[in-house]
Length: 520
Image 1: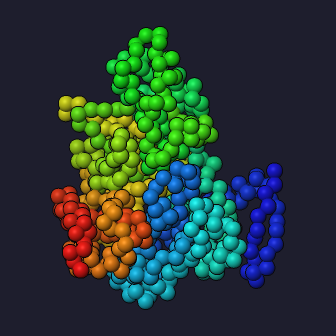
Image 2: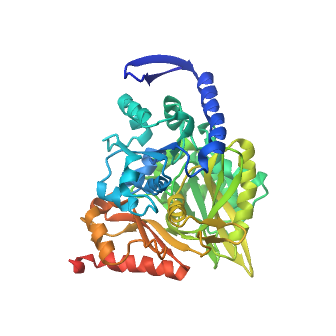
């Protein structure tokens, strides 16, 4: 099979060339193999000359993503990576669908320690597709040969450059090859490892506890059979969760209640009749038939709904670098909401000290498995944790083989404080040994905030002493600022010397913005 792509030459003349899939894979693997040498030479050298091309767009199912309010502005979540400009010879190329207001860029650059805004701006290139359509950012870039040439010209030396994407699909793989630089992320050939079905198999292989259930389902009949089998196995079961394999932020999930179900031979027929009526789909404005069509196309799982009096939803974020070294980057307690408590709203860092260390141990075990499979880059593992007596029992739920909702808050903290997470102690320490905590959210939202521009946000936050203070290393960092005026929505990371202090900043932000009209 042959694929035709466009290659832009240095003199801007275009030519078409052909290559088969085997050659494509070989070239990509060669690029990735070169990354190990590059990583070893310059990645941790603060003075080394290097370039990072940042692709902050989310390349996932467009129908599922469309349920996220202001999803286009999620591209601003990775602006925390502008903090890389604190290294005086590092160049950053940041891609977006639509241009970002200069006041937002200035907001980030003013936090750079030891670097003037002028020096940082010389090494920052912001490029936009000027395209607000539903296509992924990378698809938009691939449709614009001249834009690809612009990116090339912003890379002084390809030997010391790489591409950083929110998640990696064949589109990001193709762009990396066109640019001739490696990707710091998982080969899309391994993406199946991150589906809900594959995750359940991996957890079993690793001997990790997981909810009772069934994977590799594709049809309505499969769902009915799985629900029936779960109820027969556990007559006291009250709820089950149905998940689409590639769901995002809980938007591919649905719930089914067994209330009033018979425990005899009539159960299967009862489930068949009740399923269309009782299913509660998490994503708004999605019909039963539409949900089934997506389930049929992508496949999915059915598993028991884990419940308990003391219940948490923690996660552990891990990384496998190009040298094969595994890092346990962070642990979080996720803040979930929505009618069924399945939608990711935010997180608390670090996770509960009672089990943060345990999450790291489990994360390391799963990371070893993924390392053997060839996974590269960041990924996160989500859990449902139930306390029984003095012990926490952790049920692994899924693996997100990509960056996620806890990536940018932690990066922001790390860049601002030059610290690290100690997985053994379950604590974060700044460069001078102080502990730090945060509460973060991508869903700081209210109709009251609509109409506020980025300039208004900066003014309100400054006058209310919410701006992050580099001296005390506490305060609030805002992101997704462009979504505020239209959607009344933004993100924030509230950093404090204690968890209570971080929560105080979050509460203060709510109070200030809920009453912002009084500040006029």
